[in-house]
Every structure is written in structure tokens, then in C-alpha cells.
Image (cartoon, rainbow, N blue to C red; front, side):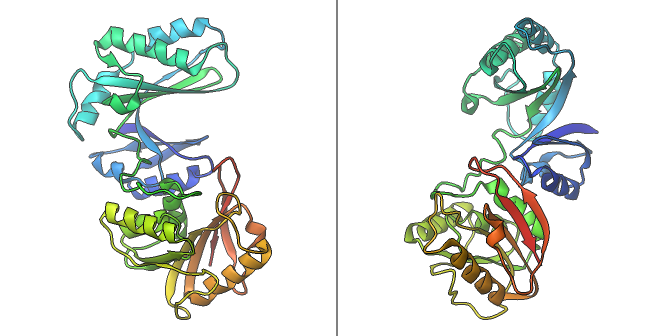
Length: 339
């Protein structure tokens, strides 16, 4: 068995755990922004996890990490004993990597300390260099291997990134728009609504098309639109980058050119009137949009919506079955699933 942990956005931990279980992982501890699990067999399929920002091989846990500067020397000594070579071998089974790679270090901690994250990185890098002869790179993009350290109070967790780059960094996401959704959040919305291959999905306010692309990559039949012509162009560009094809139109989401009951699923990052403005009165806009989404939704369909104004969501027949408060754009918006 191989010990792993995924890093995800705050509030998505349980959703990420669901997806990891679907991939055959035995999920264990669920902590702040982390999900721990055990894997058996080939690790390559795990690189397709869509709700995890990143995935790491767990290489060590340390105790007794103090808040004083004396901890820096302790961290350097502990780093010299890290079993990073087995982690390198595991990564080499998935991608080409040199036996003496350039490596980067990422460090995060909870609580006040008399040293900085940069000083932690320097201490760890010195210990790993001394033990392995590898070369430290302060630029993660120039490194072939990433070592990740989390310190919570006196406990520390160390991992080595499984992939070459963070999982949230989708290569298709080139075109951006204000308020554009993080791909892992879009994937989480699809995960909680249980989107299946072959189902039809609509995003009526699609922005740069992140939800549409993530849904298309899952095998759904998608369509979307936006009132902003530049957003429509961005969505089509990102679709082309992802190698998927779907229709995107310029429209008013309050008056969709779609037949009653014509889509099985709807997923949308609604305008919050921050980076994306709302035309007219907020409550009226949301009421009209909800009525239109309910009109085009097929019987038995479901909707996943992200907004910081969930109190304005009103439906005649649909009820909210699940809610997840997450951290995004410095806000605490909610993903709600309606059926």
C-alpha cells in the first residue's frame, strides 16, 4: 500500500474524499485542506483526480516542531533523514525524471512562529541537498520534484508531489475572464451533483467555460452561453485547448433559447455582483434566472450552483439537498445541489 494525501480548497475536503474513494483509494484522515488515503497498485490513474489541487506521496511525519528559531536546525537534520529516494522511484514510474533531480520546497504552517516559510524552505533544502546531492531550485516551475511540508502546532507532515505539476494547473485554461472559476471547484460541483457520462449539462452563465470543459472531459454532452461576448470567445478558446467541442452562445440567461425540460443537469458559477456585475436588482435577477433554469430542467434533473448569495435562490419545485461552504476569492460562497 502507498500512503498519499491530496491538497484541496477549504470546504472541498469531503468532496475530494468522495472522488478519491471512486478511484479505489482507501480514504483515512480528512483534515483542513487535506485528504489522506492508501493506494494499491498502479498510481497513474490518480493523476486524473479533478477535485484535488495537488497529490503527494506521504514520506514522513515529524513531532516536536517548536515555534522557536531552534526548530530550523532541527528541520534541517530531519530533512537529511527523509526517505525521498523511494518517492523519486515512485514518480519515475509515471514520468521521466533524472536520478539527481532539481527539487523545490513548499512550506505552510499554522500558528505563530519565530521563523518564516522561506526560512523553513532553506532549512529543508539544505538538509535534502546534503543527504542526496540533488540541486535545490527556489522556482517550482524549474524543478522536477516538489517536497511539501505542513506544520500544525508541533506536528509536521512531509510529502513529495506525484505529478510534475500541480493537478489544479489545467493546460487548457489559457483564456481568463473576471471571476473565472478554479477548475477544481468546477469539478467539485460536478462531483457532488453526480454527473454521469452521456448526460446533458447546461451552464447558462459560463464565463470562460471552466464548468463546461470539466463536464465535457467527464463525457457529458454540454452547452452554455454568456451575456458577455468576450466570455463566449474565452469559453470556445479553452474548449479548443482541451480538445473538446460544444456550443457556446451569447444570450440572456433569464430568457434561454431552449425548450422546456431539455437538459438533465445545470451547473453554474452565478454572478456575485463583484467581479461580474448583475444587471438591475439582485433579487429580481436571481428570481428570473432560477425560474428559467427550472423551466429548462428535465423531470428528475439536478442543479449545482455556486454563489455568495444563496438566500436569493428560490425554486418552485426544487429543494436543496446538500450545501458546502468553501473559501474562494476571499469570500465564503456556497455550493448548493438542488433536485
